[in-house]
Length: 305
Ligand SMILES: Cc1ncc(COP(=O)(O)O)c(C=O)c1O
Picture (cartoon, helix red, strand yellow):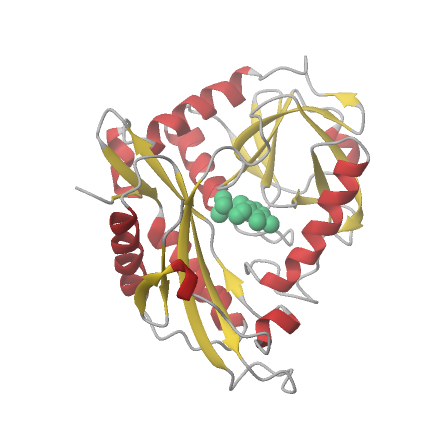
């Protein structure tokens, strides 16, 4: 189990990585975070961290949205993360959680002159949805948080109340996950994953202007689909009724990885199994993550090598 954290500028025992109940982010959700995965490869005897530079780039952008002054560069955060993972000695798949938060100041709701801190910890992880196919989905009655309210492309703590409401609503009504629509009624994303569907052999996903988190797995799959599977990819608006016409549909993201959707609002997607495009993309992604696709080794940071 987790024994260490990067906290207040150094690697300390996890028990020492604590914050006060006066913490600004604890009260107002004014932090931002990243969710990164490390993949253990038995074949390479190596732990590969996937697209760490992209994750820290998004993390620093999210911090900027919150007027947070982060004391570390992306390179320093990557270095600290690799050192943390090495010292933990993980030889299994892990999830890495960097978090930037504002220390103290509960009578100061504003953002710009708070004391900004960063912590990072990691822990072993399996699948997020508990399965990679047969995912039953509903369209949420909650709309995705709008960029005019909270920066939608930031991974901002407070905006996850939106995700949590939709996720619980979905689970309590017997579904695995929810799809959230924008204020204008078009598909945005899931509660902690991006959405893609296949129609007539074309991979379709909402554009980055659809109030979604600009997912790093989403971006990777678009590139892999074009470069390796020769697929047409369209980034465009998706209507609710179009969901019911999908031949295949999937979620993608660091937590979910890739999961095949079996039904949406009680309408079967394709034959409810994992369709050919989803399967091909999933297998390709798996090879990329474990260092078995030479063209994409630059996406991986080896912890021990
Ligand atoms: C709201 C939301 N959308 C999309 C994603 C997928 O993003 P990524 O592929 O960068 O993990 C996540 C997960 O991190 C998320 O929390």
